[in-house]
Length: 494
Image (cartoon, rainbow, N blue to C red; front, top):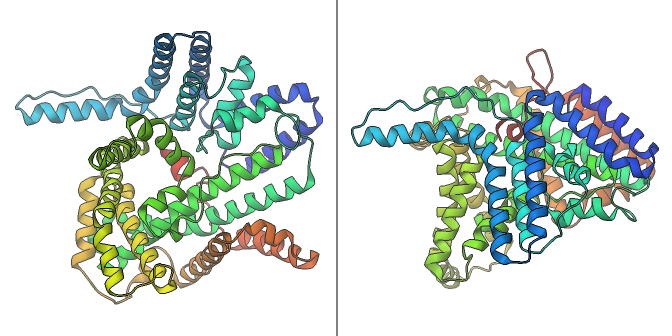
């Protein structure tokens, strides 16, 4: 049941209406039942795994919380984390580990065929597993008390708006709201019209990003990448840039719908994107992109490794380890590891070259706050991110290297054949206009909430925006017999 499917357009209003009609003491059970039904519509055979991860992490947290001795607390936490991660390793990394081991053995002259299991990755496994691991770490560190109410904790892990693709929320965020349940936010929050219209605006924006931009650009990307050797450099560059925009609008659209749906129900989820392609450096990009995951790795991996506290060299090692693990989290394939490693190298190179860059700027009297310099930095950052995305989209590291090599060596400024990439001129114009809307929205978002601006408009203008947004989705959204509405990039793969 994808967010943009007809089934969800029935499911969500029914769940919301019933949620605000049932007695407050029954809301947790109702949302939990709705969340498990939502997951059953996706992966009915793997709902047991979700329940198992919930039970194991719940019990481990209680056992940790009851111990005062640091060694016992760490022991129960380590056992809980290991047991929680076991399912993720088995379904996502078993075949990858077996194939890698077989390849290593072949390098030393030993021929061995590793076991290869026919496994389907359960949807959302990486997300709810990491949320459970973060919760166990918070309990061990004394950041939060172990949740004694099993239903409430189960809802924390399975809350349907963020179940399949996040955001990866924390114990001091979503779980705290479920515990307190007072005032404007939480399980006891009353229905609020203003909160509803704000949430609906965000959901409509997410639908626009997904259906009008991401799914249209996906046609071009899926045409070029599998047979990249047939195209020239300008076409490959168009495909690479299109994928950069596609993955932003696809995942950003999902996050917007998830956050908006949760807001209607009275819950605040973490922001996941803050205009990432307006970043002026790779470091800034990662403060704006997939914020819930990047902050998770910062808090639970990078800082425990030592962060930036133990010298420059150790900081670089910690950065590289964090980004390599982040790449592996995104997919059990070496091209994802290369994608993560490339981002790590970007940050290390930026740190190394900063003194030289400062001297050049001083010699040329370049003002850091000057708009032309910001544009140059922004375009350079976007180019670096786009190059890295090629590894993310490619089927293998070899394909990514071949793609980039051909793009660099078959240079041409000719646009001949650009309409042979799966999109005609009308589709290209529609995509261009929609991307322009996205750019304007992100630029405005730099200076404050776009939703606040819309809601502050006079009534006729406000409703004009509503109608324009809805009809844009209905008219320019990608539909049809061959269109599969269940395909979210992150929901499908992670």
